[in-house]
Image 1 (cartoon, rainbow, N blue to C red):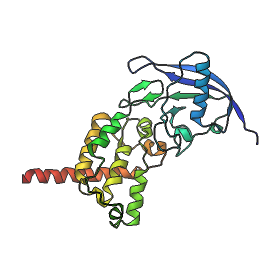
Image 2 (tube, one colour):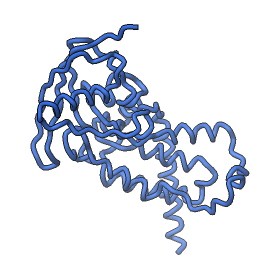
Image 3 (cartoon, rainbow, N blue to C red):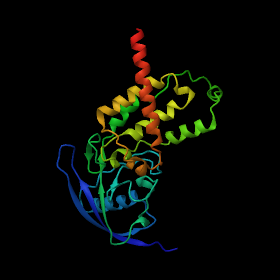
Length: 258
């Protein structure tokens, strides 16, 4: 079977460091197979640049299987590109036509400073997780963990939230640079399960307040859900808000008792 080959113009954001001014540079690349993934196409570009003794383009990647969440690229103004429910590494070049110009940028969000070129620092996400994304429980042996009965709809809802790969597309797509979908997915994953109940209200309070230190506010645009490679629903944000209000009420009662 013959593969269709494309000639493309890439307009790539280049920035040598966080404190330097960035700019777009255009590159022409030929004979890209429509079977190639978007990141494989960038590998071809970098081989070409290295061959010409030019600085290769820095971009983030790891598993290349849609699991790790590192392949954070804005492609023609869309987080992870034009394909719904896919990370950049799962996007194939058949989505583009020969002769296309493709604009490639890093995530644009104040909370994600640019490290170099197309690579951003997403450690603000780590701060949110550190503040409450854990449970304190003696684990026991593996069978013990399975002895807690969990209704199937609850287990399914927790798994839907647990699919979040922390890529940051929700933040990049949000006009306010909000991280509510990410934070709510992490909170819902734990707050829905019996193992997560001990810290439930402490967790939601700590994680939401850490999020607010770094990110913008949610105004229900819904761009986050549209950009999410795992199609996590904005419903999780409503669950987070409900628990946050309950946490504030409960914690105030606790304080007045002491």
